Length: 402
Image (cartoon, rainbow, N blue to C red):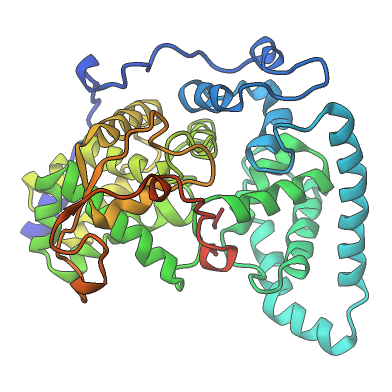
């Protein structure tokens, strides 16, 4: 009884972030609006200085009025180098391809259709009717937008049968459809999301453990007291059940839509790391985890503590803290080998200044001989700092991956 009472005595604090704990460029960027977006386009409609655009989005986000136009770039449907004419031609070609995929689904042989209904359609039909129903775009009975979302997900399962459908995918596709509006364009944006993000959505995947390993190492580096508390709880504590949903559903259950989508945009910008979502996780713990340490909460109590914070946390504050943590990480003179992959990107390298940190073996390997930095501090070659990391392949992802 005492334990339960202690667990319930948490407070939703109204934290503030001292200027000393913010990224030095924090206030240099405002939200990307129409005029700001147009300044990034040349006469042919190509995006000039893509890196600067992604940086601006990382810090300032995107105005709601142009999300439908900018998101397809962030989600790799459109290339930044494409002209307006090339994008229109792509849309036409991709629309035809999309309807061919749909036709394939609609003409499945009877046995194939039975298996598809059992493995995919039954779950999709259950999920779409309860996804984002508070959003005006999906509200009401027999809403055609719900049916559009259903078709997109069913067609995706045909397009990528290796992944099929996992619960949670509807939570990703719904906001994209609500902003992009066009069915075919939304489908291809979703394809890009699945191929090019490091979010995951299947707790059965090895990728979840990889995410948790990175997160544990970041906490060990950036919030030692919290990490020590987790370690004191043994294996159960180190599994960090309280943050699984953050990763699986991309913070969508923890924050109002406006704040969650800002976090998505910051992650999609791939500014200096493909793993910004993990810095957001650390920021939540840094800002709201003091009660866990002070009250020495057990695993189930931690789950309750962070669950009670749902929709009560300050998303903008957390984003600012996460950007500060990334900045601090980038300044480290050396990093543990367990976090070296956080420096490998699909795009411009994290160490864009040309500086690559020393990497030090932690010795925490089942087979320490397998570590290229084993037992010593070593300097990775410049190549290793800019390896193209495609983010775990889509299967590994949801599998919500890149």
